[in-house]
Length: 139
Image (cartoon, rainbow, N blue to C red):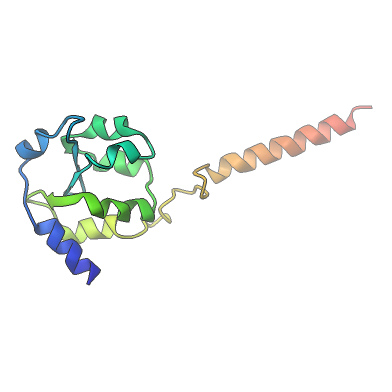
């Protein structure tokens, strides 16, 4: 049922690139992600990365920028509220595969829940242990 509701939203209106480009502003920023068109006007002030992030990609395809941030499954699904349609050549199955579930890497790009890379945490822990060891060896 959820998938059919999303399909209906996705196919509700097909937008041209010219229509989307008209919303390349902070008053009514629209963004394309995986062919889905999102009206981010109401969400921009609540966006965890700040409104500037959305305004920088307003009126254009922001799929690459969206993926570079490694959004979680929760964030991907949160966007469904702002989906207003899609581009004429958009593939619903590809969109839903990318925007309705966790990505192959777990959706967090090897990061823990706080967003810190696990490798960075290990390096810091090892540095603390090494520092403590060398500090206690000095007599």
